[in-house]
Image 1 (tube, rainbow, N blue to C red):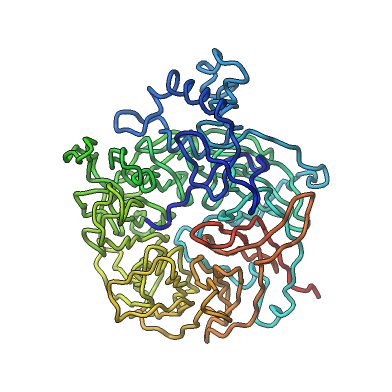
Image 2 (image 1 turned 180 degrees about the vertical axis):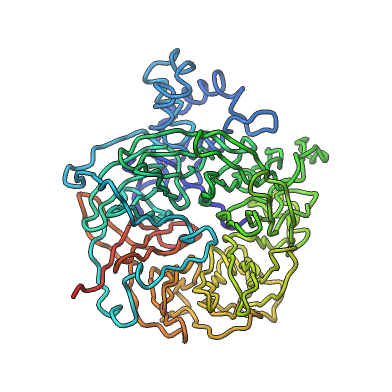
Length: 623
């Protein structure tokens, strides 16, 4: 899938990267990082680290069907700091006991391709953390609720058409060395609980931007944080890129439990966990979409899926594989064995239908032949057992990985990569009948009958492509569906010349999918402007908020599509707390609106978009 994101994962405030214009030395040996910045590691250190890994680690940590320990492709996305910690005091301390401090550092740097270098945050960035005994304001998850609507009501939002003109920047903080900002904060009373590109979760004071506590996982947090309370206990749940799910006590910032949920060595998590009835549903994607670019890689064996975890114990309840375990299908000319079926990753967040006791997921394309019926599909699973109830496949025979179209592991040079990459939405039509709405990277919005998985209507809003079409999400206020169409020129589907690219925000009727209004993504100079609406929108009564890849956050009047407020975040914010502060593209998660404040990320350094490291907070004028 075009959404495959790989980033070198470090602790949140860790490594010094090369800046644009500086010399980029080649990283020694495999695995090369696919981050957009390179790090200086000496050949001597790399050779030592590689030797240690091959002698002591490779038997368990392989990208193969035979083992379930995290494969090398997953380990390479962790931070060197977290790998050293695992060898010193974590799960690998027995294996690490035979290594010197220098050897642990060498193997960590070779695995990640990143030089281990840490520094302290200034004291000025911190404040004391506390919560009252009774906490009433908790809001979390990718779409604000288990139905995934992305809606916030008037009393909770505190922003209206009347006061939005007074919305001003309150504070801005940089995540040092970050290039991609793609996690959605949760709100707990006076605090934001925020994940990071580098595997840390921080509690940040919503009024000042100061840090209350930091919890480190060592691998990227790419989705939203989910928070729940029982009595006075308040717990945050999230998964990092390695598929490890964490439960953290929000009052203390301490871990309660953790469990790895992946079904394969290359399983990863790019979406958000969803909590319902004390069960945590974890979407599983895979790194193999990128590993396949290597001609010597035996492609492909992994499957997308969904895992269920019992939150009271942290125990894995069940795992659902979208495709069955891969089998050998032949050999290529270079002697490398081929495998299939594979792929169908679940990039998005699960959606709960409590009326039908179902959880819905969207799947991606197959990575290798043969094609399966579970790819490019919406699937409905039983909440308690994970049993597949129905599956709707929108695009058949879609087989793609990043070897396409030029390299050996490409299964089909003409496949379009038409994932369902966003979380489905459960809502009602005008006469009260339920409908499941979801957008596809083909540029199509689907209305699906949740009872049987059959399409009720479909509406094309864009040309579609490997970067969307409908990429990250939609939102609804119960009246209309608000769809963000990317039609990113970098990766448009060109097979149908009759379709024109049409990036922008669209409003559709849930009854029949008819378009009520559309507002093109503004762009002063189309020849140089990367203006696409890829990020998921959020909606409050009267207003739709949506960010664009050129760094603009806009507010649209929900009845007409008129732009009534705009802020350009793609700029330098100078130096904050001693760190360079820079906004960039807005992509990925929707903004958060709560009690007169607006929070969103700025920076998405992938696919030619503008990197950045900002979390921004806005507030309407108080009377």
